[in-house]
Length: 433
Image (cartoon, rainbow, N blue to C red; front, side, top):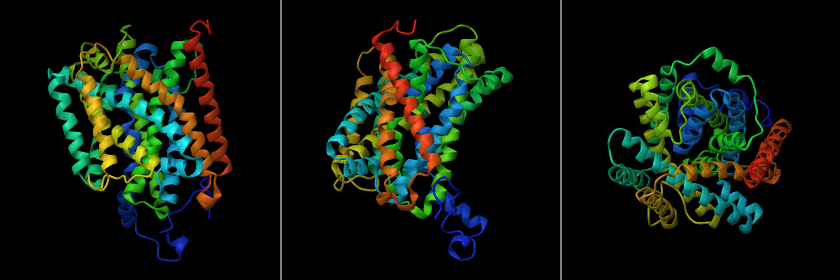
């Protein structure tokens, strides 16, 4: 059997099995039956916090951070592919595997940090709901409770298949950001040049935005959610090749959308020297600079992303908690079969929505801090994944190949280095000056 560093044909291929090769139509149907977890996981990470991060990056630094996104896309594909491979080969979620292989103490430490980050992220999703609807004149006291009840009913009452279809439609709606980016009329040659020209500045604000971009594009919850979703959907090792394609398509699409958000803000807000704090500021700022249609599309994209993520982030957390402690979990189960799973989901929805309804002036620092915390936690999750995926007893012939390991460990080293710089500059603000 070939290693993951080589091209692995689906076991259904006639060349691998001796049976007649499936027709193109049959292959497409098989692929459509498998795709979902990779596309949904990658795109939901363009949430309210992510949109805020990319908007701030474009508004404050112009096109200068676009070069990062190609590298981030490659890293995202590699990390999510390992997550998918762990899921289809073992049939278990990531938290479940960490508990079994590394013990309950390590698991609880990771889950504890993830709970804090995911609660902050859930709050930011409802902040995005409130902000986007306020642009259209709808009070948060109406929009937030309606969305909270809606996403709760979707998960608690819907089957996995129905929920996945809704999420795939929501993923497609991210195209509104592509349209907004084009309507901003950026200088495309300058955009292209910035995309292939690395730049780096040794100042604390720049390092924070770099780590935050990584943290919001490759968030720790993603590996847990995607793997749990694969298990919930019932995918197995024979689906690996199609699920790998699912991961690649989702990752590339998500990063392209992130680039368009950055471009839209760079072409308008940065060009005119306007500073912003939130995605709402970005949407309002686009109006007089790129036209009301661009602003409306940006706001609708923010609403879609926020509602989408307000359903996924609590769901991811519920999977993690239940897997870590060995409790029943899954969208296809009911309240009686998985009371803790739906209890955790409900608690996060109530807390996330409830905090937004409090008289708080600004949540921008908490939103950005949650994304930065993601960047700090990510190396820990990656090390755990690399230990698991190189365990031949667990993975058999599906362990990482040499190239995958070299690239993966290099990413861990870079992330640890950036995290160390972030901590140092936070404690000693003048360290790099």
